Length: 269
Image (cartoon, rainbow, N blue to C red; front, side):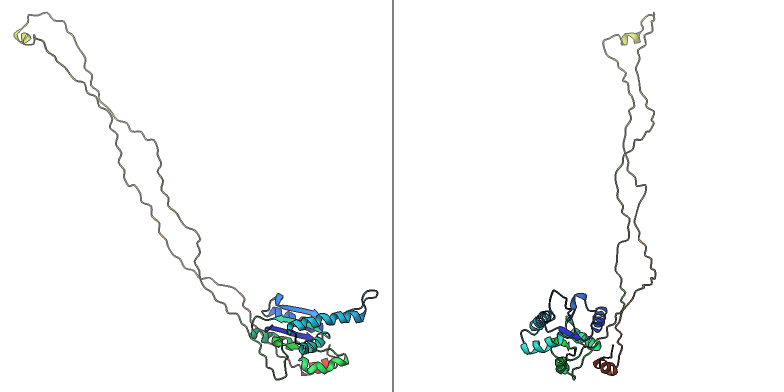
């Protein structure tokens, strides 16, 4: 409740312009409400008096909840609310509430204390309530000027890379080799001669043998490094132009003296 700002406007168009300005200057749509306290009688349905009483009850309950049951404040602001369009702003901080009050005042919201005497003459008035309290002529309000500054930084993102993965593959190979193999043969040659002394030297039991030899392939493997694969990274820098938009608050100062005089005389719009 301490950050609730209410503006009651004589003209719904002024209230709508104030709402649009608030939404365009940092206030969320959910935090700005607009309600028009007007009614239209319909034949055969609800009379003007009964509809007016229902309207007064709803506005009274709204301000009673806002002022936590303060009947005096509720009565004063309910009277003002029944004669115009109510804009409610739920501000997040005291500074934001002051800014909202200044905007509502800029678009035509008037202090209810100055306008209380006019309710009996069927005139409609508006009231701005910063922080749910009345605003006197001595109250000062400030409108913050907000300007966005562009800040450009850097962060690192992965754009690609190279991964090395080794695996073992097998392939068939052929290699030719010449092998030598020995074979013993037995030759018998018929002879007819007288035995000599050397022949008698071998004329005894015994054995005599000749061995056969053959070459067989012997296979071995030798691992040799035939290539090296390495990863190297190079860094390149480039300039890039960032195109963005930034916002800032611009305040138009308008002299409302003549406008207010015309408004109160009924010829403002």
